[in-house]
Figure 1 (cartoon, one colour):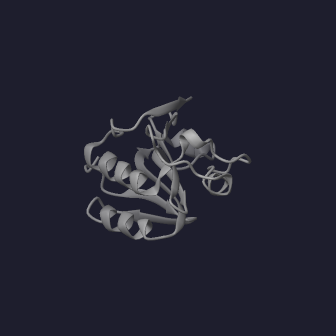
Figure 2 (cartoon, helix red, strand yellow; figure 1 turned 90 degrees about the horizontal axis):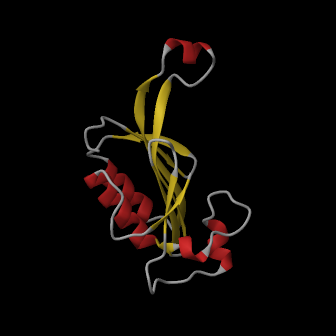
Length: 147
């Protein structure tokens, strides 16, 4: 994934861009926050002129992942080229998080995130770093697929 010139980033509602060299610094700074929402995508290239004529965005955007974290708990969703979701699942023997924490990391859902989809914040940031370096979801996590 390092061949992309700029990553598209939303960190706590702020839109940013980062070069491949700057993404590690951005992740380290985000990890220091006690809570947050992070989305990273890539520029998928320009849309055809007729798409733009019909009012769609000027460029395609490919989502890579979405992360929400709060009080040591996190929910991490990787996306594929069709924006299907691969929700990271809690590893065997992983920590459970109370409903108030799961409610803060539910990706906008009205109900708290299911406990089996909550992992530790440290694991989530490690998974993201690995995915950005290797170009694929980490195999040490299991996922729930959602179309």
